[in-house]
Length: 252
Ligand SMILES: Nc1nc2c(ncn2[C@@H]2O[C@H](COP(=O)(O)OP(=O)(O)OP(=O)(O)O)[C@@H](O)[C@H]2O)c(=O)[nH]1
Image 1 (cartoon, rainbow, N blue to C red):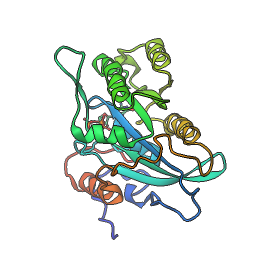
Image 2 (cartoon, rainbow, N blue to C red):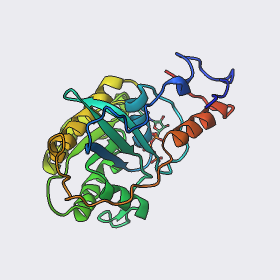
Image 3 (cartoon, rainbow, N blue to C red):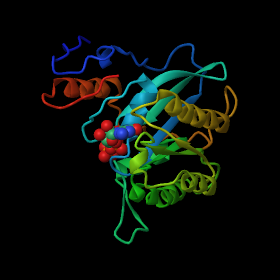
């Protein structure tokens, strides 16, 4: 696809974001029957989209349009094997007024059902987003009542230390309670931390899925995958960012 010219108002950085390819899957050299499907969940504005884009492209763009639930795919190398990875971004969830239940769109429920691994994200600058995590996990549990649920907990925006509301040990304690690992990360400032978190989850999922031709955890149950705007959606979003005038955008 021909890419739009970069507007002069954009920060040039290392060039046009769209020039970074995200390989489409499936690749012929991928391990058959091994699709790692993960979904990224959390409250509004915690950086779900930023984390996914950072992981897949190593880049950070400051502003995204409100999330409509894009599905991204690529090949990754896990323990020497090429594996197909799908990452589902989701609209935000929010706590109900009684702070016990969740507002969770049906689209998100479908994504939870579809996925094999879960990235639960809060912002370390937003205690409310942290409080969303436990009910969110319980919601995932209701959809997958039995079996191992590979999860990681990500405290994003670790670059904003002065605005921190959630201490590191609270993140660690919650992750331990939920049976997952805790990562503090900054989608804005650091690729390595984000990559470590996602790869850890991918490995957990890969193990849960079994060997090269391992049986799926849910015994071959196939739910239609969530709506898949995929690369077209990603490109459309970037075009929108590139063409929006007067918005300050950081291209790393
Ligand atoms: N300082 C800082 N800002 C971040 C970081 N990650 C994301 N942001 C900013 O936080 C805002 C929200 O980021 P998004 O990726 O859109 O968050 P989201 O969770 O997908 O938001 P929703 O679409 O509301 O669900 C944007 O302005 C990002 O630039 C981070 O690590 N550090």
